[in-house]
Length: 547
Image 1 (cartoon, one colour):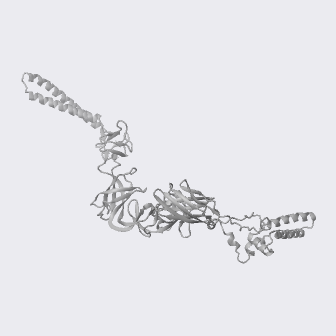
Image 2 (spheres, helix red, strand yellow):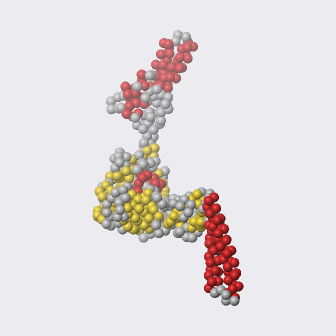
């Protein structure tokens, strides 16, 4: 029996059972047809006695969900019912090619599409009875033995195996009881070894390891590199396309840049004298707090050393002494002025001198008691804050930086002159596009580069000072090509630059292209793509991951 298990050893001419065992189950698509006409593209899938119809816009691949679809079927005209973005119709057909005519009405657009649904060619053959796995012979060997016996079914094989087992059991044992036990055991093993013992006449058994085909809508990469993406998967991935159009564009230069604040809408807050910081009423402003010009942000109290305190007290004593002397002089002058013994001018001068002495004493008291107030020079948002209560603020230290987020600039570095820098855009690391306006270029090199300033028009939220960006400025030279969104241009596993072209309703082909950046949101394809092609502009990265 172990020797008979070698199925390939007894295979007859024209058969290779080793190759049959290598067959594996592979997913197949359900029967379907596709058609296109005018602005519509249609795919109809026959599944479980139902016809599922997908209608999309031909140019954009966007689903058409509110149309009226009428189908000419073998049973007469039927209207498909819209449900969950598709159209469904009962289709109890089993065999044969079915010619169908679809009438799609969407607003003012009316199109007639037709196609043939091949049920026989697309449907997988019904699987035969599966082997139980208990037989020790291969099915190919069973077929070979059946042919040699004469095609009389499996019962002659079973009888032959039983007799052989009985003879072997009789030779192995001399005692009757052991003969009966060995006979039953040999018969059982022979029965299990008999191929297809329980199969009926006319039925064929499948090769071991060959399972029934699996039917389902699975995206897959074809041997030629193209992608087969069924419509349900396209809906799930939200695949969108545009029609490629060739036109003339200006070449651009990519420049490194960073975001800087507008010098007319930003400012620093610094202390004019060294001192100890203290919070104003309400505390220090937090990061991101909007302030107005003139708001008090912090207080600086100058530190007074012992010698400074002694000098201030000495000066204060001198002022008090001078004030007392002048006050007595004024009192004496007032009495003499009544009898005209002293001119009135002398009295007025003494009064003015007393007033000046009092103001000097008042300022000296303020220096000792009042701290310096740090005031916001412009209106904006606190971009940076280095204020801590009790900290000693130096005269050159920046305590606060105020920036207006609606008025930001970009400083870019270029290694060549830019005669036409008025048209420029920028792209952030997360792909956001910024519209720029040229402000000016420097006349002094910075690390062998020329600094160029651009103002951000309508700055979106989320930009930060110091954030790195890529500036794309026009270079003046014109080129002809096809402009596509940047997300449509990818790199494959070999490092080639590719775009996906929608060549069929469910077929996408990668096209190697030669391109260049056009602006912050677009790239230009110079070679490898023809005008009128349907280029995938949304979901291309997901298509590139299909294996």
